[in-house]
Length: 400
Length: 66
Image (cartoon, rainbow over all chains, first blue to last red; front, top):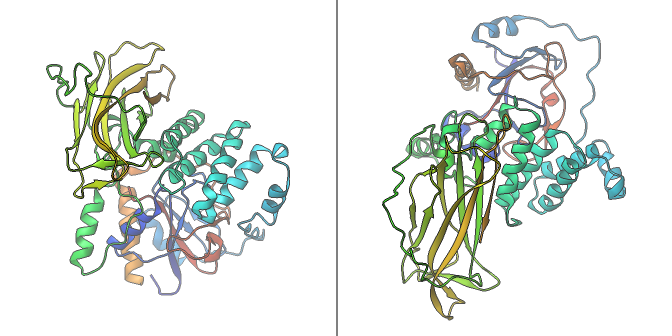
């Protein structure tokens, strides 16, 4: 490869670009990378390697090692048609026109373009309007792409200071709706499988992160930080087996004698990510427990851990029926406590009624820093809805 | 830089040869200009288009870290 004659660049299809930054650092690759989290270019698979000549013309879109030498040694003629000028990020003034128009006059395409522009600006403060724009596009008969991008924006908002209750579940639902419209879109499918159950995973998504950090540190460098650490689902590999169903176990409060958190001092949010096809009848559930800021709820770490107990219906197998979230080190704290688990329900009677996994959480919490400290119970339902529709399973969840 | 670029090219092409290629993309055909839309750069800073690489041959890897 003759120096100066060729350049290398990347284009990533990823919800969290910061993870790619760590990946590049690990492999010591320093070429420029563009970020297409919204899948604007419509790629339905990765990886692909394009060979593009000096005029900007695609000469190969699935390059093999043997193609490189020919590409580098070929002198490509200037194309007869001039290159179209690049479109400015504000679509050459179109965004200004959209913003100044009345909301009810905007088309689904207008709303999608507006959502794209707001997302690409990268400001967290724009995420509220961005989500609203994509919702309008999706509700206004927009293409599946609008639903996919809605999911991307919702997921990003769920990880930001502008998080709204239910954002994570809404992102999963938006991606599932998008996939319904284009089942062959593997980039969209992977976005769901990243958070979904093990039987539906093609491979583990982010198990390389630990090794990358170790090797970078050994080199004497500081690993590039991640905005959001990969969750259990993103580290889990493909698999179909689960632990014993624990039918013989009894829960910590079988008679329901612990006082209920009716205030609530702790907000409970549940998200369910199902399999993306009919072959794997499974789902991954996420429970998030957040102290209620309005009620000044605090975890009481002088007492004990947080315990979750699950009571699945017949035929539904879980990772386990009991989960423990250890208390924090300090006396009181307000961190979000999370647990994930999988439910496999292959062979359960298929009808339109949802399957319900009932459960409850037991926790030690205080009302305000100097307030009364209590041991409370919060009941919930995890809703699994098997479907016969090809390529799609839907699910929902609700805390009681 | 050349050694880094060559190493990375071999790395990515080996991934392709390992059989992970999947469904066809529909819009980007040989003989067409690569679309010139602006996207954020991984390192931050101004948005950039693939068209900004014109003037030299380009090896463009479309990938994800998973």
